[in-house]
Structure formats: structure tokens, C-alpha cells
Length: 326
Image 1 (cartoon, rainbow, N blue to C red):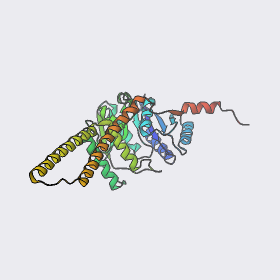
Image 2: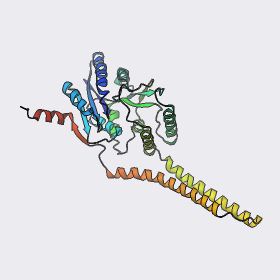
Image 3: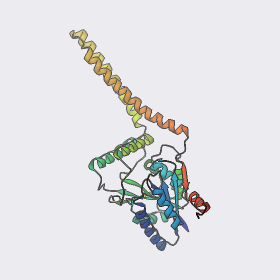
Image 4: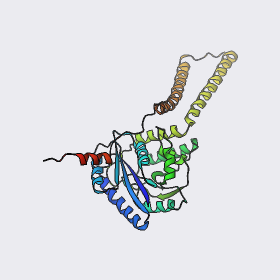
């Protein structure tokens, strides 16, 4: 038998979890009939949800022995959720997918076909459209991938999703990268391996609301640029060189105009403009350097990527040892 671990990071997914569970069990039951060698486990990660997501995990775990879960002590972010799922997955194959059904479970048989014979180490989906998203958000997303691929040596495919069906070898390679500041889209590409991309049209959430705001996505994009490119440091150095050249040229022009033509040098306005320009450039370059130093600072602390408060083993142990009420 080959075990497939389905890892599902969740944050406030109370409304959509029943829909997801019904859909994923239909697909996995069908796959077990089609592929007799397969068995499944469902590993849900509660990323510090504030709704009844954890209670849903309890209910699912009570009625289905294949359901496992890890509940964080607070919200650590989706990256920590995915890492926890990969680390605790027991399967020969590991699937990472969202609970909102924007990652259609119906693709799982096709994804397994791609990796079962060793032709590919990973099968993933790639959105060819962003139907349902605002035009501004879609424009920024395309620009991010375009800029990222120009300034980084790690190619990140535009529209590639975190929805992945991976072999154990690839999962172990990802787990070997224990960095605190994680950007999984870059990590998936950096480790390499043979990847099959399955194109599909964007699917909207089945229920609930997304936890990703535009501000959050911008911050996540910045994390990716800092994690997989040193180009911003080079840009700050280039700006410094350009500023010095402009200043040198202006000095020469000022000297020539004064000595050759006897023109008086405009004082206060010129000085103020130069001060603001140079101060702005210095602060900008210092800010870039500060971002990299901040990431280095966090890495050197060696803090855990996540802290688990409860698992299905702890929950069942407490439930079994709980005294009966008279």
C-alpha cells in the first residue's frame, strides 16, 4: 500500500470545511477504487483560527480515523502551516491544497497519474486566468512574477499554485530547507525535480472569505523578493553610484559657469533640493539594507517555525481520560 497524505492549512475555514471534506472524500474513495494500492490520510493544520475551525477538526476526527490535525498556539501564517503539514505527513506521497475548493480535488487522479510511474516528482496546477479577481490585483500579480524572474536565478512560473502532489523525495528536500523566513513558491522551484503543470481556469471560493488582503499579498511578495534575490542590494549600490556621478557633474558645471561666465550660484533652493534628494536616496538604500538585516536577525534567533497547541492524539487522549458526568 502507498499512503497519500493530504495536507490542508486552514485559517478561519469553518464555513467551507464540511464542503471540502465531502468533496475530498468522494474523490479519494473513487481513487481507491481506481488505484488499489492507495490509502489516504487527511492532515489539517489550524493556523490559530478564531472561529470554530478547530471544533470542526474534532468532529471530523471523531467520525473518520484518517483525519489528523495540528492546532497552532497562535497564527503563524500559511507558510508555517504548510511546513508543519509536510513535516508531520506520513505518506509516500504528499498533497498540499487549500480548503476553500479553489484547488479542485478532482485534479488529484490526474496528478497521481503523473507521479506514480516516476515520470515526474511533482504535479501542480497553474492558473491560466484570474477570473473573479480585480484587474488591479491581477496586474500586480503578473508584474510580480515578471520582476521576480528577472532579478532572481530561481524561476517561478506565473500562475503556479501551492496545490501540489509530491513524492516523498521532493518533500524531504523541502524539509531540509529549515529557514525561518519561508517563501514556498520559491522553495518549490529552488529544489528542482521534474514538475508537471496542469493548466486550469480560476475557481472562486466555495464559501467564506479569503484571509489574503491586498496589503498581505504585497507583504508576501516582498518576502519572496528578499528571500530569493539580492537585486535590491545591487539597486541601492547603483543608485549611490548614479547620485555621486550626478553630483560630480553638477559640481563641474557650477565651477565652469562661475569662473568662465561669472554667473552667481543660486544658493538656498539648490541646497535644499540636493539635501532632500540625497537624504531620500540614503534612507531608501538604508531601508533596503535594513530589510535584509532584519531577515538575517530573525534567522539567527533560531526560533521554531510554529508551536503546536493541540493534535488529534492530544485531543483523543483528553477525551478518553475525561471523567463521565453524572
